[in-house]
Amino acid sequence: MTTAVTSELPNFIGDLDIAAARKVLESRHSLVTFSCDDEQKFLDAAHELGEVLLHRDSDERGITAIKEIAGEVQVGLTKQELLFHTDCPAIPAPPRWIMILCRESDGQGGETFACLGDDVVEHLRQKDPAALAALTAPEAAIFRTGPDTRICPIIELDADEAAQVRLRFDRHVHFSWDVTRHVDAILTGMRAVSWRFALTPGMGYIIDNTKWFHGRTAYRGAREASRIHVGPRAENG
Ligand SMILES: [Fe+2]
Image (cartoon, rainbow, N blue to C red; front, side):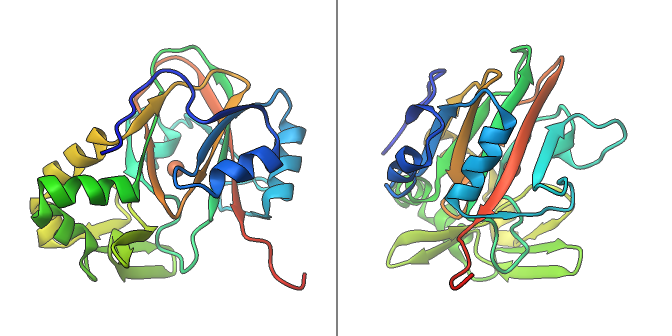
């Protein structure tokens, strides 16, 4: 079982460098942390990694400001805890990579946590096979966002490995009865294998959104991060 709970940045590569980041992103634990003092450098790195994807909440460059927005009901834009999730689980091809750069934080919560789908599978296979069966069932969840609806496993297995993970806990999801009755065991299993770290301004991470669940603890005070979704570059332009 892989368990790493730390306040230090895991897989830290120093200044953001996509060649160095790729080595980590292509390994099993495809989460990399970095430092970057300039938003344009952050954007340039995203373009080097792949195709920058626009999002409903992003600006025309593809950058989304993740911060508290008064009156917003999306939990990611509040100060509440953001439970384990993946980004855009309802669409056919969710963003492959999520890039986050912390712009502002006064250190009162807002820690990042993340767990690898394969580690969850390995843990639950030993501790709670019924919970694992619920997560990997073909109709474990219904994700619905705008025009997109997807009925699928939360962890899609391919040869016993987590090929694709999808999850959210908000008004855009419905769970099967089997997932609902095992949700405590599922969250306990995820926490048991999760990594946890605190970003300070100028620090960030890149994560493989198809392999990792991620979240953020509640926070007080000011906090803002920039987010970019990146997909594989389209072949032949
Ligand atoms: Fe997210």
